[in-house]
Length: 85
Image 1 (cartoon, rainbow, N blue to C red):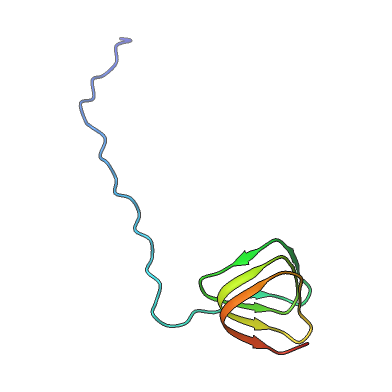
Image 2: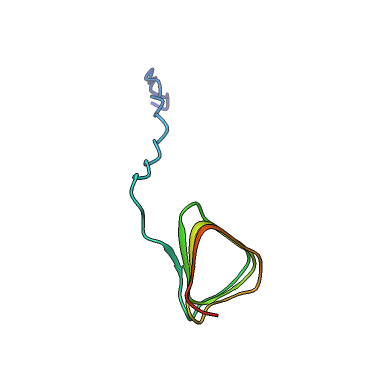
């Protein structure tokens, strides 16, 4: 009446999810909009567009700095477009 049923099935191991591959083409940039203030470092393996304020270092493959953007830190990029001061 109170005995356990014996279930001899073994759990099946699931495979780990496979991360999605990045396409060879360019992706949309990460955008820091004009009304945004970021305190800290930004590091990206892709493109960044900054229109707001960054209080920290910026490192990316491609960087676009907007007309009214402000960056208080070190800036390192392979390709850079500066549209402002």
